[in-house]
Image 1: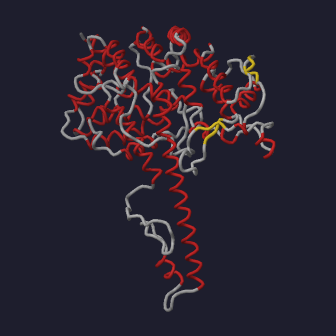
Image 2: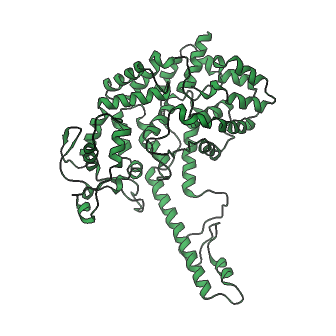
Image 3: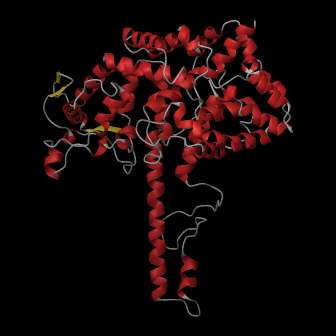
Length: 487
């Protein structure tokens, strides 16, 4: 029974967000079966909360920023006019401050802009949208029964990352629209959804790209931007050193010209995908030795479909999945099994996930993976039951403090997925663990140790928690235990 409980605890930490309640005992009879059942759960990987689409969010943020700019210009105009004609007995500064919109959002006299109620603690609209998306994402992780599918969502979102620093309005909607619907579907569909999403097209500058011989390119004397083509080949599909050349990158960039969006200023469809023919480089293109006829938007779709089925893509995805879930240097036999499953199933991601959890190599008792910040924070709050106590803003701040701000990766290759990237930040987790432990009420640390780690807890960890000087310290020590930091 002890071995079965150990396998259950391992399953919950390695493939989910950690145990809650009596889950270790509940899964002990068949932990692999429980993970497979998570793949079959209706609605798994989806978010039920109604949130605005990426296009709607982009339009709302555009309007917000335009209105703020207008208010600023009106304020400056009022100051100038007040300086030229100050009221009798009043200084120019006083006259200006009497008429200008303040931080509370009062209407500017004579302007057509609506007055806004004063909400000094209300964050600006872009941040409100981001917080709503972040809360929905975090709630899905913390409340998941196991969280295997949600972990897959996080994996693919990092693999196909964008940055809120550049597309704040679309960061959350992009994950909901491009990643979640396809997380257990076909890789080809996921790839197409990602590369054609306006958030990705804007993030990797494809909206600026135009064929040098296209109508727009000739008229505006501009040309290609190769960012999307290069990152699709190097990061999203084939991987580095897989045989493609700079010529392939350039030709693929020509294929992708015209893949753009409707600017958010357009009130009805702004922020939506659009293929703009006048930007598209005319003519056939050769990518990876294959000629693709000029078929407008279909030319790009054809290249993506072939990239999705390329053997190098299967190998690249297999290596990343095995490294994420099992070990920084995963067993070659596991990588081979995943690559074979990917290739043999035509990129069926559910079949690949099934191969991952049924492979014996995935169940090695050595826990070699250090949980990255976001995953560790989710596990801490899940374990302590503080999801209703810790505000989402504090959670996002904690992630940023640990070097992993939500939807803000340092580069298009996403956040690193190796121990070397996060080990130096472990001391900073102590303060966060102490804060979250202080918010937990009426929890017995010993009981929580048994439900959260069970047979994974070493004698040293049990003694350390038992000898703590206070309940809060005991909970923090549990959250910082080596067994809890790893999966």
